[in-house]
Image (cartoon, rainbow, N blue to C red; front, side):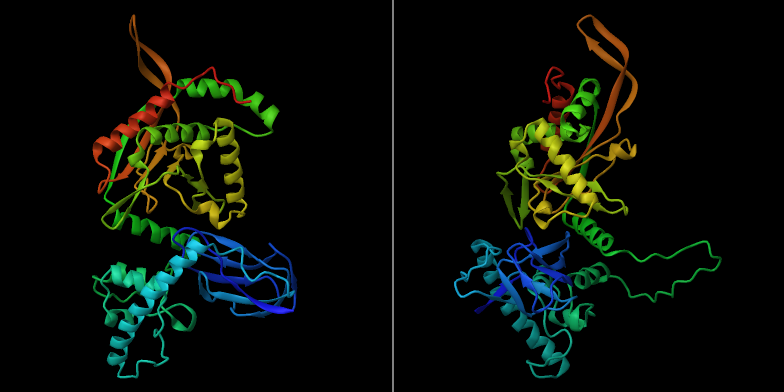
Length: 426
């Protein structure tokens, strides 16, 4: 028998750390490959971590509520002598990135510790609170020009009073504001109730604030005649349900139009890295899903351009179902390059959606409403009843000018208004 170390696997794009929620196995318990042995939370999703070996838990190296860096050891697994000593859960490329990130963090930490130690008149290797900063926290401090002295004053809410990402973002929000004394929450007449935000709502709030701070939001609108799409869907939906056992909603039709438009205007499928523009070859469409608790999550349809309409319909239904059942994995939320939101499901006519970072654009589809509209024909203009929908397109004006943002929106409109009503689903 021999002991192998299991490390925290990659949790998806840009995720550098996670919080241990539950240890699902005890020391001494037998495990097999892909057995879920712990539950963790990232800033995107709660997920279970599978075991990469067959054997038993010899020793846990982490505890519940610990904040753990990706690639760090989390457990010792006792395995047979002939078990290979490589983990299937950590690919080589992310591991190299972690090594580079750790090197940068190490240098930053040394610089910060020197100033903090002098400020406290203590040796540089003192073990007081806030002496350790994660690579993520140090990276944010460097990007936001937070001095070591300022960093030392930030109260930490993590394990052993360590400063977390949430702590440093909260500090940035109040950095230039005069501190105010907040009175204790009370209710004078019993007509109000104070409710603590849950963890997901806090993360959503942070991401929305970050996006508005990072991107120069501009929103364009267009009104689309959805009559061909509405009539076609009405004609095929019952037959599709009988044959497939599932429903065909408007969402896959809308996503298909967006994917086609991205192929025509690939510069909308980009992200920003400092002063560089990163062109994405993959078309990965995020779709906003409202959860039963009122929160919002954005699962991703990877390689959306490789699906036909029936395939998109199946994928949309599958992801929405797993999102509402809290069964999404970290990979389901990673790698999005463009996002859509069907706000029409809530009878909203239009909105100004906030961009999902590091993407540069997002599209919201409003409710489809019947209204009188002018119909242009070779014989002249007519007045008729049409099914109309507003589309909102928010884009990052740092890299997407009004011409590109407007032309892309018009192209989505054209694909929907010229929808092929003779096509079949099955």
